[in-house]
Length: 140
Image (cartoon, rainbow, N blue to C red; front, side, top):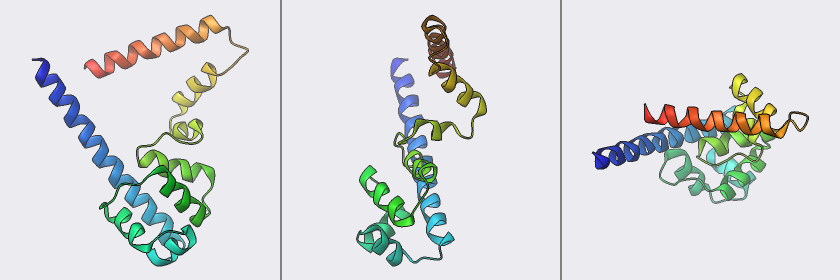
């Protein structure tokens, strides 16, 4: 029984990694094509080998944080767009609030958790509630 649970977790993580890779590749390509740049042009602007850009877009290579930083600088991306690339590649964003931009309820919770005017006990209670809800969701 425990083995089945572990296998399910591993499979769920594998599917999430695949979705993440596809999302990153598509996002990178959209940013490049929006500028009407070739992979070679992007590589030159990002100061990286053009074959790396090709392998990143095709999924033959996984992006590193460093590579994403170079790509974002080369593409002159706004911080939010760089964070979207980071998130899509499975990294934590430079600015955590960027990860919440499309989730108004989560944005509100994030703000509450960081609101120093709210008593610490209430923020701790909210954290505990979120942890409990997360455990329930993962157990379902």
